[in-house]
Every structure is written in structure tokens, then in C-alpha cells.
Length: 345
Image (cartoon, rainbow, N blue to C red; front, side, top):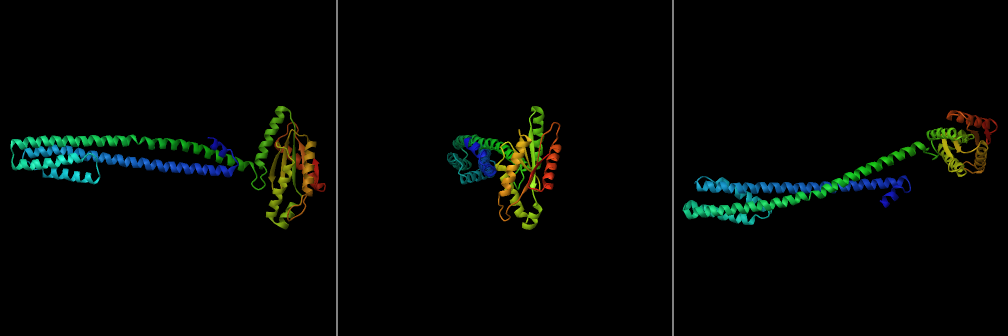
């Protein structure tokens, strides 16, 4: 259990993927073992049932053989049937048949003597030996039935494996479901390129922050920013270079944010930061610090770039659209004011 928790709660998606693969592999192995054991035991039990039925045929045929012999009837076909069954069972190494076969051979010899000399002596000898033969066959049947019963009892093992496999499968389904659900949530919550939060996540988070502000009378601020002349970067250096700029930009901005601040990619080269429990002026300070850090950073293959910021804060009655519209207006003012600056609205 400790290993399970360590692996599951460990270092991210890659480890969890390997762990789930390992569980699936174990489940496949368990399933294979269980199926093999179950089928093997079933075949053994089916074989024992066939042996018992054949021995039952011998037991019943001996009585008919003797009755026909005493009545001077034709019993050759019965004798051949019994001989064939004994031969077949010897090839199968059926246990406890040696004594019964010995009595059968003696019974056939006595029957031959009786047919040649139907005296009372041979008659009694025939009947007596038939009873001994019948009893030895009956004993062989009982012992083979006991063997079969033990094999049936041994089916408990594959049944236990089956139960464990089912429990394991349920656990694996739960883990896989959680894994898929968590990764779908992660996919929906983060921008695949920059690893900033997605627009959808940001909007939901902002709605929750508005609800908290209304409930607890708190304040928060919103920053929107985008890269100045980003289209020319893509046109001049290509989209792959532009993507690297976006990723580096997010890393720079994130370094100066608090753990409670939420950075998201709104679209294209436009980003937003929500700062819980922050005034508009503390947000301006954060924006200015980020702007200066970006301005002095050397972007590989490009050089220096600049970013414009728009800042606003929550006002009573605001909806998400109101906040984003004011922040966007401030950003537009920064662009019109010469870029590489921070404006408020």
C-alpha cells in the first residue's frame, strides 16, 4: 500500500502512466494464470468423470456377462467391451485397476472352464469370482471418485485467483478512471504550449473569485498584457521562434507572482493574471516589475522585446466580462500610449 501511494502520488503523469501499465500487465498475468489453472483442473475433472463412467460400465457389464454365461447365452460382445475398456484405461494409467483386471482375467478363465464343464463346482467358482471382480471394480470406482473430488476441491485455488483478479480489475478501473479524469482536467486547465492556465480555467477561476469577493467583501486585481509587435516576430523569425518567445515570457512573468496568483493565456500572444487579495496599485507594481524584467531579457535569436500591460480591479457588481473589458481597455491605452508601459482603467 505504501508503494502504491508513493507511485500514485509521485512525480507526475509519466510515473502514473508506468504504474497503470504495470497494473494492467499484472492483471493480464493473473488472468492468464487463472484461466490456465481453471481449464487444467476442468480437463482433469472431466477426465476423471470419463474414467468413472467407464469403470461403471465394467461393473455393470460383469454382472450381465455372468448372467449370460450361466444362461448359456452369447456374451462375447460384453467380454470384448470389458477388454477394450481395460486396455484403454491401462493406457491412461488409471489407478487401482490392477487387482480388478486380475480378477477379470480369472473370471474369463473360469467362464471358459464352466462352458466346457458346467458343474456345480465351476458354477459356484464363477459366481464367487464375479462378486470379487465386481467388488474390486467398485473399490476402484470409489477411489477414483475420491481423486476426482479432491481435484474439484482444488478448484478453490483458481476461484480465489478469479476473485482476486476481479477485485484487482475494479481497483484498476478506478485508478484508470481517476488517471484519465485528472489528465483531462489538466488538459482543460492548462495551455499546451506555455503551460499557463487556459482561458476556460481562468474565466471559471475569476467567477469564483468574484463570488468570494461578494461573499467576504474582499478585493482582487486583474492584469492583461500582450507582446508588442508580436506579428512581426512571427513573420520575421517564424512561428516556432514565436512559440519559444511565448514560453519564455510566461517563465519570466511567473517568477514574480505569488502562489495564489493565476497566470493564463487568453489567446494568441495575450495573457492575463488574476491577483487575489490585491489592490489595483499592488497589481500595477507587479505588472511594472514584469514589464521591466521582460524588457531587459535577451530572447534567443531575437534580442529584446517589449510588452504592454493593462490593469484593473474588482468593482462591486462586476462580472467576468466587465473586468476583462476594463483590463483590455487599459491595455489598449498602453498600446496607444507608445507601448512598453502599464495603464489602469
